[in-house]
Image 1 (cartoon, rainbow, N blue to C red):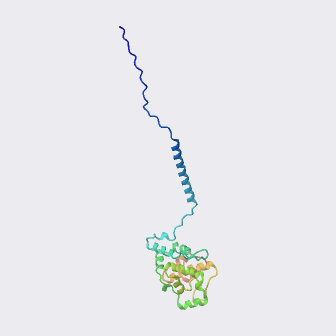
Image 2: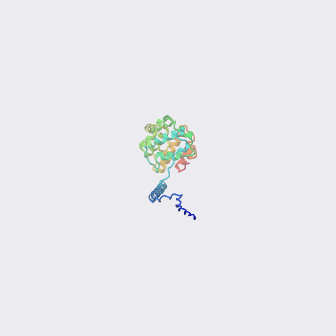
Image 3: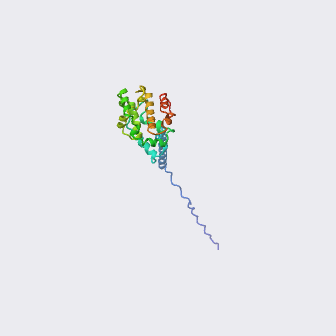
Length: 236
């Protein structure tokens, strides 16, 4: 008998072991691209704005000590007292001249600044006889802008009332000294500004704050420092 062999059944094709990747999502890709471009543009605009802004200047005298130090608190108080004074002489207000010539002057010490903050009216007051001589020579002395300029600086540093200081020292801002032939209201703004600053330093010297004339003018003597001041010198 002839045996009949069964033909092997066809083997079904093997299933793919890999799952096909999902179709690309162009919409999501575009969204990501748009966000990236917006971020780049924002950063570029921020950099452009920063480059056009002027650099922030440090606060005058901040290098002397932070706001929590004794000298830092004194400086903040002094500068705050000058914010309402808008008198300008030769391009300077009392605030800008005080900042440049005193607070940012490396020759002026922290100790001197603290000493100045404690000066009293009686230490600055002009002798009553000399006040009379001042008003005889310059009757409107207290009305002069340079007088008010100088009074503002001294008042800011000491805390003395401006009106009281003006009453006690009518010679502030005048060139020269009471009791001498040289006492007048300077005509030029350069001399007015120089006189205002020299009166500030010399009155402080007279009140017992040693070294103020030398710190600003390079010499402590009253007359010699006044000459340096009048000649346009100074260390500020």
